[in-house]
Image 1: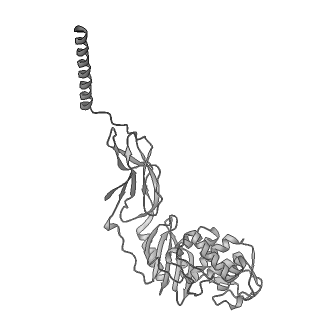
Image 2: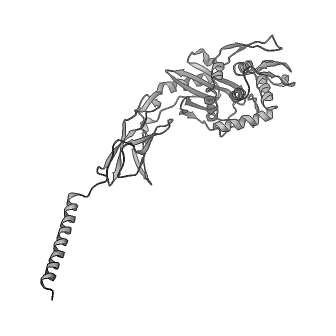
Length: 380
């Protein structure tokens, strides 16, 4: 335990060597594991190293489709659509598909031509759509991402990081329609021209495990095998990102299993529980109990209890009951206010001090009275 006095705030944090977990052994170049609700990062490997995202790029494309196009809106394939490299849904120039069906082809088959059709519909060109993708990613909090195309086909200026992709994946899973799409094993397309290619199948092998419910695969030779996965067990959803792997399924399973082994949803502090005692200057008592103003919940370690980071104000009496006197925080959870359990009044003078003051006052008064008597008795 360390205690630092910083201006008017007492900061109490915990350092515990035994709290450091040994992470899973992964062969991929970079990876990250987060809890979806709080966004808490549970484990990383080179999460901020720039990497080629391959078709995990389509998570961003899907987000922009949902944000900008209605599900029944017809999207028309541009004239040059056949020049787009596979994988493909084999769109024909001028072919029309609703946004909903295009979204299934985009996320299940990872159709590059579907991504290009979406880009032209929304922004008029691949170049302009790439700018929109990058702008929107930054608005979500991605700091190391630059998109130049909607499908992830290799380009040296098209890159991201495991951390940024986890941010996009977490955002994507807030859209009910996308949550439904990415967990779907197969889908039959409705389209205007190519009636010989209607069935699309999900390439995410992790869906064979019923606890997995998404999200997107990716592969190019420069990017290696990539996989953004989502799994839900015992009421907790974890999102993993694995980039540049030799075996993306093996790395994903190792990472996700590790997360569920060591973490679970839980409550750090109950509402009204005493968290610490705060010193009070010039108080009738030296300390006041700091209690939680509300429940603090999040993702908790299963193996050992985690300790909070406390920020306690420098207090001077009087302190009122219910007064906010600090905050408590755990990693991955927003801070809550700590309040004074009871009133602390100012300290009254001690008995000894009061007695000395009284003796001085009485003695002084008696001396003045004797002087006045002498004056009255001996006026000359």
